[in-house]
Image (tube, rainbow, N blue to C red; front, side):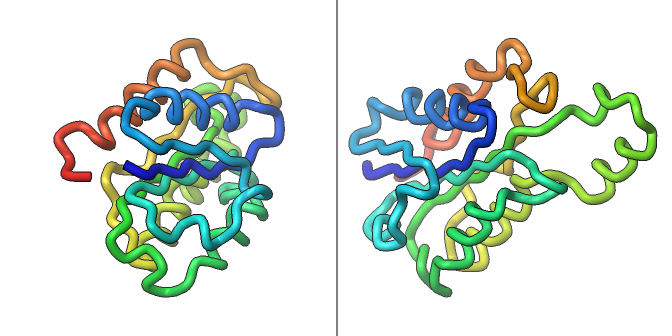
Length: 161
């Protein structure tokens, strides 16, 4: 199986999640984990599974991830299974009621990533997932790397990839 995980990362947390996902899928065959700036759009051709992840920045994916997604042509992911993830604060960990309200109203990066992948005909394999960072620069909440590996295994478990 040919798998590509594309990510962006500011403080290394999303990168750690992306590599945990890649390591969990390593036994599946040809698995690559690449920072978005190193990915060429032609690399999505011939994939069986594309996973895209971003830190949540202003309730959205990072600009480089958004640019990458916009570069995928309509029908560009026909026949490709897709999944999306982000790193984020947990709304329950935020003290500001105003910020919690905004987080609940505007959401996180994973949903817009998944929506864009679906608009270019990717087949969403699992609901978008968020992995929790404890503070602006991290670290990841304890257990998040294991949860990311489990999430990745659920993507392919029982699926005809």
